[in-house]
Image 1 (cartoon, one colour):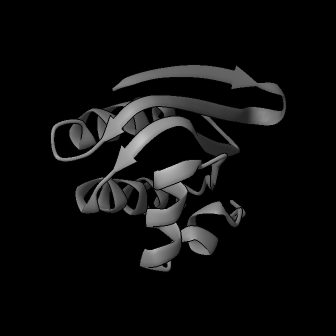
Image 2 (cartoon, one colour; image 1 turned 90 degrees about the vertical axis):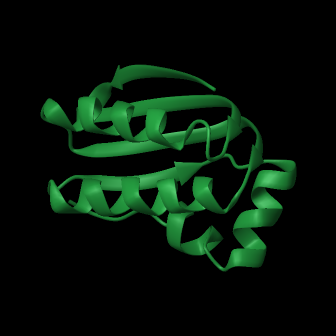
Length: 104
């Protein structure tokens, strides 16, 4: 898993993920989320366009990222899930929850 961080206008921090989000990489996502939220941010966006695979541990990591952002008073949104990752989010019932923006 490769994760890049980019600060955008309006206090938005975007984490762009590529690779597989699973048991082997979920902790890495949590570390990046913690670092991103250590600085003031209005919204945290996780861009999943490059995620080719997401298992149940990955789903848990995405939910944990959302909850962590909310606890920090930061908005949250998952964007651009594709292919199998989008299907896993749909089947789990989490697509609307994670792709719907939360307000700070």
